[in-house]
Length: 67
Image (cartoon, rainbow, N blue to C red; front, side, top):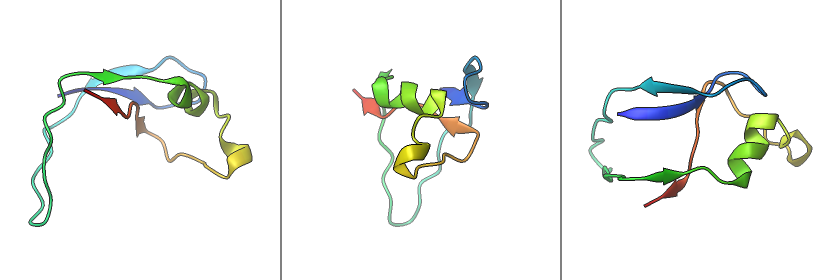
């Protein structure tokens, strides 16, 4: 599957191919057809969440607005 990845703050994002997820015994896999990038993702990309106490581990797969 293709994912948008933040590898460095304030640097171009990368589109990478990642393996499909594997199913955990107590989990589910949801098929996502589209994923949006919102202002929260932009703040993460700019490194603006440190004031909130959020420091993302990089690399970080962007997006949480699933459709």
